[in-house]
Image 1 (cartoon, rainbow, N blue to C red):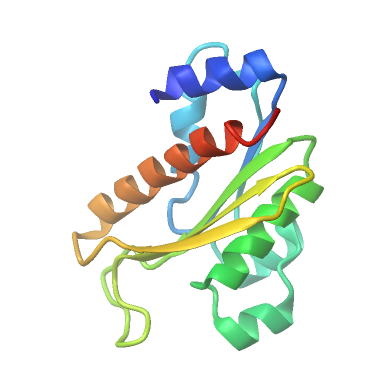
Image 2 (tube, helix red, strand yellow):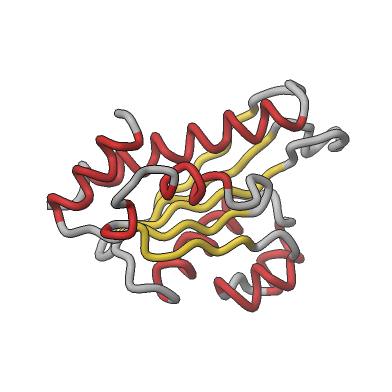
Length: 158
């Protein structure tokens, strides 16, 4: 589904969208708001690049960060849920990962965790290992995957 089609579907369903982004730094929100008329659907975007921002803006718990690290499905889930609680949106997506360069044996470059929260439904999380494609390509791939998750989320809303 194109971004324009995603926005049209959300508008037809009366669904507002919010994003909570770390490694993409607002790229998902930018892709959405590049389309004229997106203000009818895009409620807000949280760029939560630091752990402090994740805690303050979308209520990620310090205990979750300490136990799992910022690049984890647990944090991605809390980011998506926090974006839902701290906005007037009914659908949120979150992105947290290691765009590179760098990483570790346990959290390699290109690993990105996503959260998808829909009002009244269980939060969905997943991890995608895009590989060491380079910072720009990892961020673009993460943006595109987040947009696809939003499209899928719209189909779960009646």
